Amino acid sequence: MMRIYSSTRWLASTLLLSYLILRYFSEPTWWSELLVYNSVLIAAIIGILFTPLPDDHLGQKVFALALLAWGVGSITSSIDSFFKTELSIFSEAAYSLFYPLAIFGAIRSLRNQAKSRRLELIDTLVIALSGTTLLSTFFLKPASSEISGSQYEVFLTIIYPVGDLVLLLTVIGIVLLQRLSPRSLLFLLGVTTFTASDFYYLWLSQNDLYIFGSLSDAGWLLGFVLIAHSYWFASDEEEHPRTFNPAIVTLALVLSSIILAISVLRPEYFPRFVLIPAFATIALAFLRMAVAMADARKMSEEQILARTDELTGLANRRRFIAEFEEFQRSPGSLLILDLDGFKPVNDQLGHDVGDQLLAQVARRLERVVPKGALLARLGGDEFGALIPGREGMEIAVALRATMEFPFSVAGHEIKLGVSIGEAFNESENESESDGGSLLRRADEAMYRAKREKVGVVRAR
Image (cartoon, rainbow, N blue to C red; front, side, top):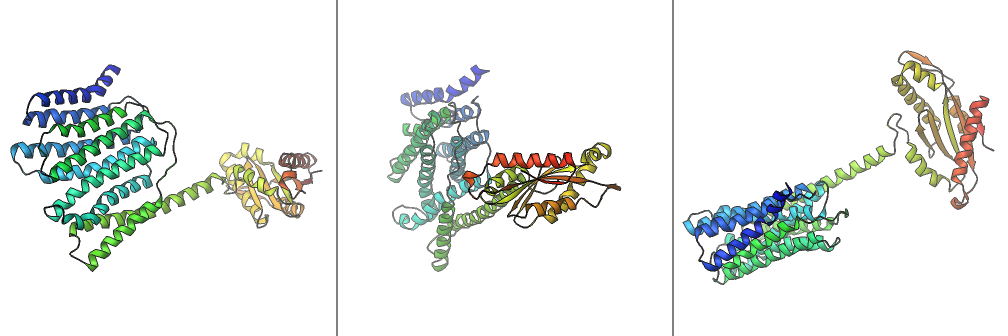
């Protein structure tokens, strides 16, 4: 199996070398440019998809899809050149689709993220759309006086170099913001080679020097082969924090709004078709805002759930311990509560009844705890309370009094008691307060109250 994988790695390089040798000794023919040339691209796609290294498979697949889109453009262009067909609209659409797919695939492949986040996807689309289309739009009017052809042809002439620059700068940014690795450097070299070849082709075309099937066309293939080889090196194992700044989306939104404003004031300045990406960018920006707010709300809810006891709705042990650190900075009482008579109920009537009973106990205790204090379920039938000030013993007595009346659960009348240990924190200086000692004293007082059946005991 590994031998098969290894052969797919070098297949594209072998076919590229064969193409160069073939072209060096012969003139371009339909089969050399349509079949052999594009077979190199197909082999590069196979090399990306069949790497045996564990990786972000979505990044691999999307970048392979980007190469496939470029390949469709190449094949239709070759058919146009040799068979005089009219497929240019397909080739232009395929070449244009290459850029957003390549940008997203590059980000996923180089950043080594285990799963795609919605914001990452939207940010990538905003960068790709606004970077390639908006910049092209701003340069459309001045460029139309320098480049011959219709506004649509001028637009297509500009969008490719801008797309090249956005792709190249995106990869450079990712590489510079993380540790250098063979994969990232080889990927960057491949994108740089592709960009240089594209700019050289555009310069030749603009000066009427380009000849279809020139050896310079192999530069695109070389870039893709280098990128395919990069997938055979392990990606950086370290996760890096997300670096996209919301200001990028804000800038894209402002630029798109400027385009729409100009189109209203001067309707003939921009052709109508360039307004579509401006509207799309604004829509994506607002979508990003909505997704960011939803993610923030979800994160807030998850943080609340992570610090809340699921059964009773009280604070859980994690939150209790976290707030205990802050509690030690000022005078107050630490209460440890343990229910009396709960275990027989749980054993005889079942855990469902026991859970309902605990929920009712929590509601009663909650009513007594003053505002600014914290009541938490520490686990099982044990509770804790942090009472600021000097009213801890009074609150403890009131908490015990809530157990005087029986509970009604699932048709059963259940009588419970509670043993409470109270330890007072005298220190107003956290450095002088011994949290471990305070917890131990409250715990010992609670066990003494349980042994002596006195309800509430203040720690010595």
